Every structure is written in C-alpha cells, then in structure tokens.
View (cartoon, rainbow, N blue to C red):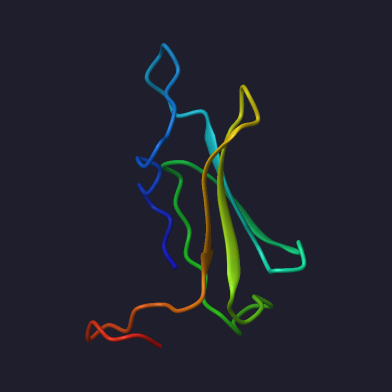
Length: 85
C-alpha cells in the first residue's frame, strides 16, 4: 500500500494550503501499523518489516477537529498485473 499523495478524498486544507490530515493504519484489533502525514508518503507491505498481514483498517483524520474524513478496511492489495494478491 502506498500513501503518497492519497489524501484528496475528503481531505481538509488549512488557510495556508497545507494539509492537516494524517493517515492511520491499524490491524483489526487496533494495533497501530503506521502513521503518515498527508503528502509525506510511505509504503507498507504485509509480512515485511514487522507489518502484519491483511486486513488493515485505514483512517484519514483531520488534525484540527479530530474527525475521520475517510474510514475503510483493506482486505486485498492489487497485483502489479492488475489482479488481486
């Protein structure tokens, strides 16, 4: 999963134009996998570098209000050939 530049869906912006959202990734039990600032990017891969297997719960959280602007569960990742892993 790559997070670079992925904060546009429901993302908030400040008056300076800088994004205020954060991306939080956890396993279904709430164990934090990673946190990213919008536009900072990052790559996660199941079973690598201590990252748990899927599913992952992903939230985009507005830092000012604490509101979730996106909440979703990732159960499959796309393969490079367009299929699913």
